[in-house]
Length: 92
Image (cartoon, rainbow, N blue to C red; front, side, top):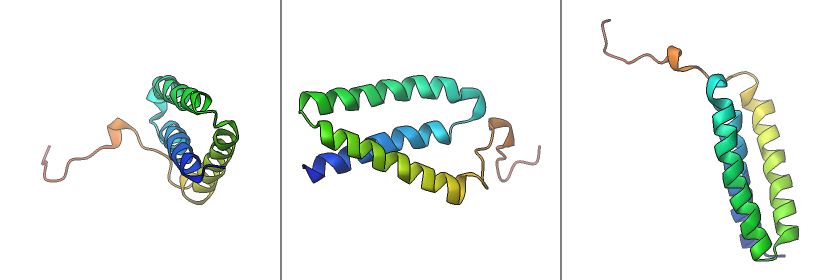
Protein backbone atom coordinates (compact mmCIF):
# COMPACT_ATOMS: atom_id res chain seq x y z
CA UNK A 1 0.00 0.00 0.00
CA UNK A 2 1.30 3.43 -0.96
CA UNK A 3 1.12 5.52 2.25
CA UNK A 4 1.95 8.75 0.42
CA UNK A 5 -1.05 8.30 -1.86
CA UNK A 6 -3.29 7.50 1.12
CA UNK A 7 -2.21 10.71 2.86
CA UNK A 8 -2.78 12.74 -0.32
CA UNK A 9 -6.25 11.25 -0.79
CA UNK A 10 -7.15 11.71 2.90
CA UNK A 11 -6.21 15.38 2.62
CA UNK A 12 -8.16 15.80 -0.63
CA UNK A 13 -11.30 13.98 0.48
CA UNK A 14 -11.08 15.52 3.96
CA UNK A 15 -10.87 19.03 2.54
CA UNK A 16 -13.85 18.37 0.27
CA UNK A 17 -15.95 17.03 3.13
CA UNK A 18 -14.89 19.81 5.51
CA UNK A 19 -15.76 22.55 3.03
CA UNK A 20 -19.19 21.05 2.44
CA UNK A 21 -19.75 20.61 6.17
CA UNK A 22 -18.71 24.15 7.11
CA UNK A 23 -20.32 25.97 4.16
CA UNK A 24 -23.00 28.56 4.74
CA UNK A 25 -26.46 26.99 4.62
CA UNK A 26 -27.59 29.11 1.65
CA UNK A 27 -24.51 28.20 -0.40
CA UNK A 28 -24.18 24.53 0.60
CA UNK A 29 -25.61 23.14 -2.67
CA UNK A 30 -23.24 25.20 -4.82
CA UNK A 31 -20.27 24.20 -2.66
CA UNK A 32 -21.37 20.53 -2.82
CA UNK A 33 -21.53 20.62 -6.62
CA UNK A 34 -18.07 22.20 -6.93
CA UNK A 35 -16.56 19.85 -4.35
CA UNK A 36 -18.17 16.82 -6.04
CA UNK A 37 -16.19 17.78 -9.14
CA UNK A 38 -12.99 17.96 -7.06
CA UNK A 39 -13.78 14.58 -5.48
CA UNK A 40 -14.38 13.13 -8.94
CA UNK A 41 -10.97 14.40 -10.05
CA UNK A 42 -9.36 12.73 -7.02
CA UNK A 43 -11.19 9.49 -7.79
CA UNK A 44 -10.08 9.64 -11.43
CA UNK A 45 -6.49 10.24 -10.28
CA UNK A 46 -6.69 7.14 -8.08
CA UNK A 47 -8.16 5.09 -10.94
CA UNK A 48 -5.47 6.30 -13.35
CA UNK A 49 -2.71 5.34 -10.92
CA UNK A 50 -4.53 2.10 -9.99
CA UNK A 51 -4.75 3.11 -6.33
CA UNK A 52 -8.11 1.52 -5.60
CA UNK A 53 -7.29 0.30 -2.08
CA UNK A 54 -5.58 3.57 -1.20
CA UNK A 55 -8.58 5.57 -2.43
CA UNK A 56 -10.97 3.41 -0.39
CA UNK A 57 -8.96 3.78 2.82
CA UNK A 58 -8.34 7.46 2.16
CA UNK A 59 -12.05 8.09 1.85
CA UNK A 60 -12.86 6.05 4.98
CA UNK A 61 -10.24 7.88 7.06
CA UNK A 62 -11.44 11.27 5.76
CA UNK A 63 -15.06 10.46 6.69
CA UNK A 64 -14.04 9.28 10.17
CA UNK A 65 -11.94 12.41 10.77
CA UNK A 66 -14.76 14.68 9.58
CA UNK A 67 -17.29 12.89 11.79
CA UNK A 68 -14.91 13.25 14.73
CA UNK A 69 -14.54 16.97 14.00
CA UNK A 70 -18.31 17.35 13.78
CA UNK A 71 -18.89 15.53 17.09
CA UNK A 72 -16.20 17.45 18.97
CA UNK A 73 -16.49 20.94 17.45
CA UNK A 74 -19.07 21.22 14.67
CA UNK A 75 -22.24 20.45 16.64
CA UNK A 76 -21.59 23.19 19.18
CA UNK A 77 -20.25 25.77 16.73
CA UNK A 78 -22.41 25.75 13.60
CA UNK A 79 -21.22 27.77 10.61
CA UNK A 80 -22.42 31.35 10.62
CA UNK A 81 -24.06 33.37 7.90
CA UNK A 82 -22.83 36.35 5.91
CA UNK A 83 -25.23 38.54 7.87
CA UNK A 84 -23.40 37.75 11.13
CA UNK A 85 -20.10 39.25 9.98
CA UNK A 86 -19.16 42.38 11.88
CA UNK A 87 -16.24 44.58 10.93
CA UNK A 88 -14.31 45.88 13.92
CA UNK A 89 -13.83 49.62 13.99
CA UNK A 90 -17.01 50.47 12.06
CA UNK A 91 -19.37 52.83 13.90
CA UNK A 92 -22.34 52.16 11.61
